[in-house]
Amino acid sequence: LVSASGAAVAALLILAGSLDPGSLDPGVVPLEPPALPLWPAAAVLLGLLPAFVTPAPEAARDPRKEPTT
Image 1 (cartoon, rainbow, N blue to C red):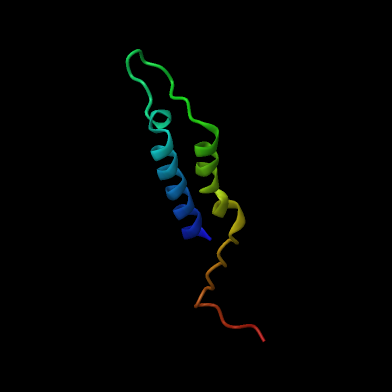
Image 2 (cartoon, rainbow, N blue to C red):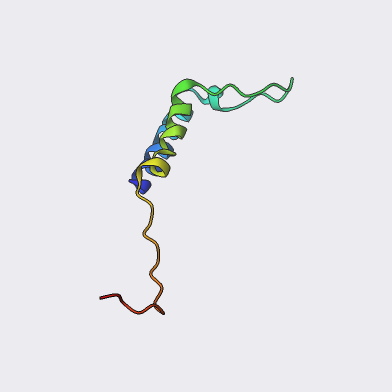
């Protein structure tokens, strides 16, 4: 899931850059905030999906403790 979401973000942003290159290239003269189109922004949010979907790693067991029976 993690690698697939990263690959999907990369593919969608490459597609966005090839379809409308001006939308991902902010202007500098005059200085203005960049406008990010909706679907490239959604592609970036897709990259955050594993942060919420993947389970937390299990806590490491302490090897010094004796097993309880």
